[in-house]
Every structure is written in C-alpha cells, then in structure tokens.
Length: 476
Image 1 (cartoon, rainbow, N blue to C red):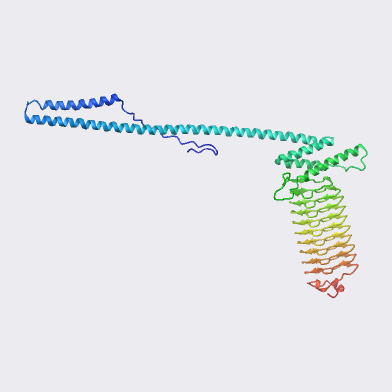
Image 2 (cartoon, rainbow, N blue to C red; image 1 turned 135 degrees about the horizontal axis):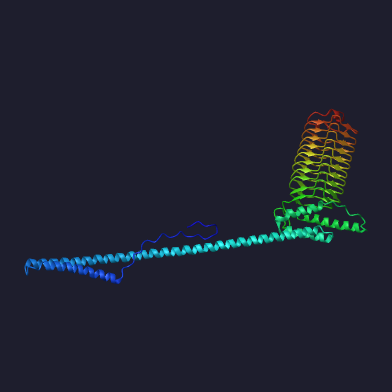
C-alpha cells in the first residue's frame, strides 16, 4: 500500500505491467493447420508409396508399401496428437493470462477508486480547515467587537452604561477562557484609577456622581471576587471559577473589599488603600503576595488564610483591628515597620519559615497565643503599647526581642523557647508573666528593664538562669 496522510484511505500499489497476451487460435486457423498437416502426411505417404510400387507385385515391395503406409498413418496420428496437445496448452495459457489480466484490471480499478476516495477525503479535510479558519476568524472578530464595545461603555460618563460594560466583560470572560486574563487586567486597571470616596451626606450633584461611581467600583470588586472562589469542593471547582489569573491592583482604592474564600494565583496590592472592613478570611494566596505600604482604614480579616508564597506586609498601616487567627505562612512573613493601630490577633497562627516583626508598632493589644514559629521570630525594636500575649506560644527557632518595648503587661506563660531566646535591652514597663515558660537553650536578658520583676523557677531553664532573673527565682 502507498503511504497516505493520517485519516485518509490507503491507495493500493499499482499493478505490474501486463505480459504479452496469448489469444486462442481462430477456427479457420485450426482447420487450416489440421488440413495442412494431413496433406503433408498424405504427400509423404504418396511419395513413398509411388517410389515403392515401380516393381509391380513383388511381395517384398508390397510389404514395404504396407510398412510405409503404417508409418505414414502413425506420423499422421502422432502429428495430430501433438497438434491437439499444442492447441490444449495454448488454450490453457490463454485462459490463465486472461484471468491474470482480469485481476490486474480489477486492481487498477480498485486503485483508481481508492485514489478517488483519497482525493475526496483531502477535499473534505481542506473544506473543514477552511470552515474552521473562517469560524475562528469570525469568532475572533466578534470577540474583538464585543470587547471594544464593553471597554467603550466602561469609559462612559453615565454610571449605568459603565455597569453594563462591566457585565458585558464578565460574560465575555465567562464564555471565552482565553480572554479572561485580558479582561481581568482591564477591570484591575479601572480599579487602579484614582477616586475619592463618596461624601456623606450626598446632597449635591457631585456627591451623587461619586456615589454612583462608588457603586460601579463595588460591582467591579464583586465580579473579580465572585470568579476567584472555587466553591465548597476544591476537587470540583464551580463553573464560574476563573483559575490561574494574575491581579495587579497596585495603588488601587478599594472599599469594603471581600475576597474571603478566594483562591488567588498572583496578587499585587502594594500601596492599596482599603476603606471599610476588608475580608480575606479563608483565602488562599498561591504565590507571593505583596501588601507593602498598604493602608487599611477599617478592620482587616485574614483568619484561616493560607499564604503559600512569601507574604510581604512591610510598612503597612492598619487603622482597625487586624485578625490573622490560624493563618498559615508557608514561606515566610514580613511585617517590618507595620503599624497596628487596632488590636492585632495572631492566635493559632503558623509560621513555617522565618517571621519578621522588626520595628512593628502594636498600638493596642497583640495576641500571639498558641502561635507556632517554626523558624526564627524577629521582634527586634518592636513596640507593644497595649497588652502583649504570647501564652502557650511555640518558638521553634530563635526568638529575638532585642530592644523591644512592652509598655503594658507582657505574658509568656507556658511559652516554649526551643532555641535561643534573646530579650537584650528590652523594656518591660508593665507586669511580665513568665510562669511555666520553658527555655531549652540560652536565655538572654542582659540590659532588660523590669518595672515589676517576674517570678520564675530554676526548672524553667534547661541552661543557666540569666543573672538578671536570679533574684526572681521562687521555689519550684
């Protein structure tokens, strides 16, 4: 068989060139040859007969003539038999060649039919490719047209038109997964545009205009968040879930942002201003997340959130309460220079790598009860203006509190310091609770100041008791 393209019918190999066909002899030719043979035999016999009859009735001559006659008849019969055999062979040969030629003719017909089918299949495939290309081109033109109209509506002066543009973009993204990232980029760009929060009350046209713009932006936020939630079953995400998208909201102004339960692939929130309560409870941050220089004017909820990448919260300002209860930081958390104006709650939080709270300011309560630091915990220069609780906190790495300041009560009861615990130069202005805390390595309190000396037992220190605490030892 001849090789063909995948999906096309095979074409048989061409038949061999036909050999010379032996045609059967015509009836006249057979009769002529038979008569000719008989005449030749008769002529030979006659010649011999005449030659042997010149001497009359000589018995020897008569016997010779009879022998000649017998020989002649034998030759005639033998020649006739040979001629009959020749005719039979020629007839059989002609029949065999005719059958062979018929088979070759049939093979040629089959080859021609297969070739015809192949050409037809190639034509159909070409027509299908042309139709697909035409359909793809038409779809692309339709998407481009719809996208252009939606973006045009998004830039309209009237709020209802802008809302229509947002919903048109949402539908276009839902129906065309390849366009989702582009559409998300457009929505993020819209949210990055500068805006002032609406005044209260809105009793003038400008205030009403800003209120309507506020509603448009809330809709944009809800569209993003609604399509970033995989649903209650992670193994079978909802049909409305848009996975693997990048969100760049750098410098945006967001109001009442609710991304709780979302699965965020890549998120940039550097310099974002969050107005009102902000919710990331139960959210999964799949890659590095940047909240650097962000400002939260209201409450910030990150309870049970999972940060699979590096979490950057440096120089962040949180005016309301910050809830990080049971949050998981898998690749390090950086809160250097962050200002917690409200209560900061990290109970049960898990820090799988190093955690930085260097020079962070906790204006009110700081709750780290039952938190687990597997890596080093850096609180150098941190300021705790309210009560600080590290009750039953597990420090798996080194705990560094160099130069930190505890303005009110600080409790480390039942805390476990698996490695070095350094409180060098720390100012404890309130009561200090160290009861039942365990120091398994070195404990350094050199230069620490205690407004109220803590009470400890020698059994709490597996190493040497710090000299600064030797006077506070009570019987265990």
